[in-house]
Image (cartoon, rainbow, N blue to C red; front, top):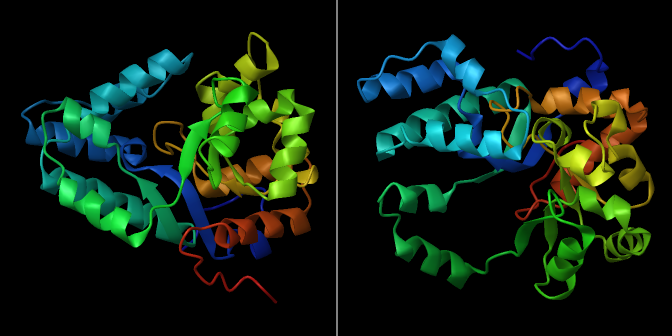
Length: 267
């Protein structure tokens, strides 16, 4: 069953979707956090988790991220949060997701991810993907494209400050993984706009899309940013994007997926 949506037409809400910018550790819902802490003998209420999941800037978000991941200590913990994420995705008709796991967190906790996994992945041909232009400037995006050969850019909202870069991204068909609510919650958008604060209405999603830059709409850390993929489509609609443009957004997430799954959106 789909979650209730007050804005989206059924044709968009019920559409099969893909999500390409999604952090496993940032998807842990408050109730699941409580289950994790209980495994460590720590009693934490859902209200306390929600309090920690409130931030004024990127640094505060990182502190909350470090706190919640401190309870991820064995494979069973990762199995729990993965099942929880899968259920949430399926409830929104997300049939394909590329989920990022933070190996840096594992190393920080003295855990031992198998280096053989990476050898195998490299042998199969890794894709090139990098976060750029979230907090940093547009030059970071250009470096990712021209020096590293990035195939997709995580976030990339700094492109709005460089018209020539916007042209480059459009011409080369390099997608930006846009996460509107994340950009608001971390203060990243306010920083790019050089303002004290920013609202969803200020987001350049529609501008970037209409410039011809491929966009894949995503949630980043959905639980920690109090959002869902359906919410992000609602934000896109609030920015004035038409139903047809929303349908194109849904299709783009399949078109630029590294595994190129069949979306079944064509009609």
